[in-house]
Figure 1 (cartoon, rainbow, N blue to C red):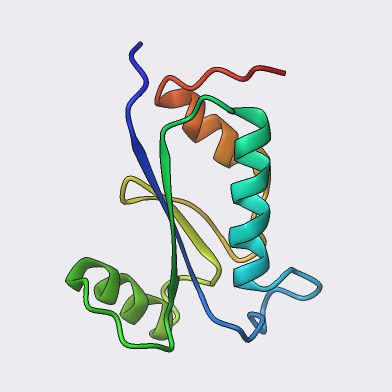
Figure 2: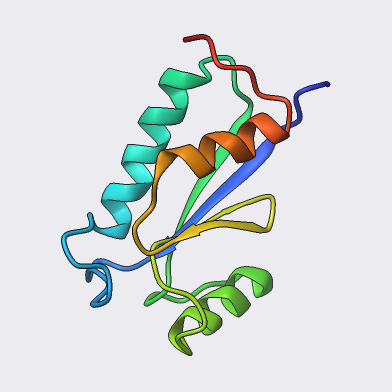
Length: 109
C-alpha cells in the first residue's frame, strides 16, 4: 500500500480538560505525539497542526470541530487524522499508531 501524506490535527487549549485528570495539556500532547510518531515512523509524510480552540480559527472545518468541543460533544485534546477522530481526552499511542498503519505506515522499530 502506498503511503499517503496525512494531516494530524490536535485541537485543544492551554487549560487541561477538567474531565482528564492527570492528563498532559493539549500543547504537550501535540509535541509528544509529534516526537513519538517521528521516532516510530521516521520516513513519514505527515503534517502536524495544533488548533487552539480559544483563539480565532480561520479554517471553517476546524472552527466547526472547535465548536463541537465547546459544546461538549468531544473532550480535548482531540486528535484527528485526515478528518477522522482518533482519540480525545487522554490520548494513547496505540490507537494513533494503528490509524497510521491503516494508511500504510510501517514502523522501523
